[in-house]
Amino acid sequence: MNLNFKKVGDGVPLIILHGLFGSLDNWMGIAKTLGEHFEVYVLDARNHGQSPHDNEFNYEVMADDLYEFIHVHHIVNPIILGHSMGGKIAMQFAMNYPNMLAKLIVADIAPKPYPVHHRQIIDGLLSLDFNKIKSRTEADDELSKHIADLSVRQFLLKNLFWVEKEKLAWRFNLPIINQNIEIVGKGLINIHPFLKPTLFIRGEKSNYILDSDVEEINRIFPNSEVKTIANSGHWVHAEQPQAFMQILREFL
Figure (cartoon, rainbow, N blue to C red):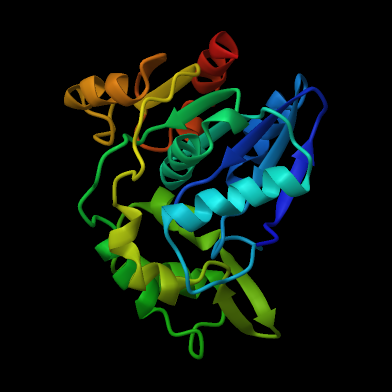
């Protein structure tokens, strides 16, 4: 699959993978900072951003998408950074292709299954009728009936675009994401120890990486460390970008 991407800077290659309902645009601020010292590739996952839509949507195929991207662009030993769903893609890639990356960075996700917890968001997204909604403001008003958190709505609404005059649409493939939402929460397969340097970054206010997960993290990633960012929820890079960058610099 020919994934959409942006490239920033020169140096050691570093690939960034966004989370569910996200896009590469969410990471351009971090990418530009990292681009001062690294050759940064920021990718749109399949069914997200401006990458192609496809009926297959699971971590195996998305790890293979990453393999294909690295191969096609002749990238050697990249550092791979993934957030949430992107972190799961990165971990699955490390399981399947351990010799193809130099280091792994996982932001606020553990190598474990998660119960479906995006149902309310998906129901809100599905409720929007773009035959009636003619502006982003109207979309936000409708979405607010399902999602109270303004920051979450703003994050989601970044995915709106004008597919034609006076016709809005989502960039992500909502029907396929909805159909496969249980797969998004699944754990890794083909698990074995990944011995290269690995960094897990979690938000202090997030419940995605619990203290009880650290033992399993250390089992699968014996050369890993877990860092916690104070006063941060799940979107660690957006909520505390300076602290996030400081932890990255220390690891890189």
